[in-house]
Image (cartoon, rainbow, N blue to C red; front, side):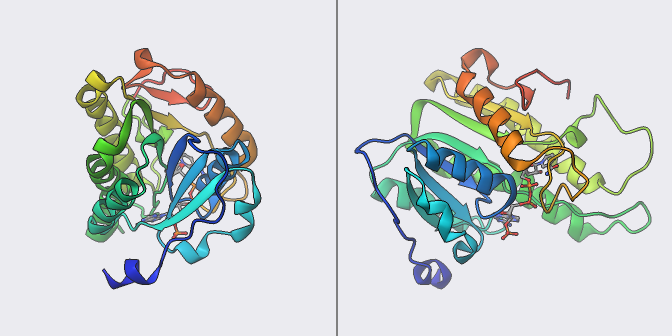
Length: 246
Ligand code: NAP
């Protein structure tokens, strides 16, 4: 993987000997960047996984935690195994993994394309599955895995009018299923696996009309993540921690 070799990941700042380690995908913008900033500000060691590490804003490293930016393209499964090797070589274990990266294609019935369905499924559902598989041995017993899902992935609450998000909705329904299955797979290690709907948030994906800022969504998500325990594993939750029908 020449791209990975070229993008020598940078350890920008280390403080403390054993800070909790957090892996966040899609860390360079939107909620992923907000989550990275949040955990850096609280002294965690953040593994910021980005499709293009050069897009991770350098100023985000100016917080009290330590940061390593790593390349991860969820369309290429080789990145997940490479990332797992890096975590192993660093001798780190992962306390929190946030599968945040996603794509959202807009196509109305009549314009549906196989490529939009396939790409959405690969990035939003298959990617997180293969990433967790690759890093599972690096997870601390009692670790937490958070899958950023969406209300659109709910079969219990299908929108009442047609919309353009069918491929995205299908991929998030699959991510919810992955969550339920991983919760069972990892229960013997007390690993908590939850899907969370962040709400409608002002990011590139959410658009300018979204009512929620990244900071307020991150505040809600992270305080809920802090409270999660084994009894929550397998659930789909709102940002505030309320179980959602899916
Ligand atoms: P965003 O602003 O569009 O950011 C998406 C992130 O995913 C970017 O960092 C992007 O990297 C990364 N990404 C896309 N394709 C990738 C790939 N193949 N490999 C690795 N990374 C990839 O999205 P957001 O609004 O922050 O959303 C974050 C999460 O919340 C997503 O799971 C989304 O479905 C969920 N969510 C968001 C909202 C909302 O209103 N914003 C609502 C419900 C759910 P590049 O910069 O390289 O493209």
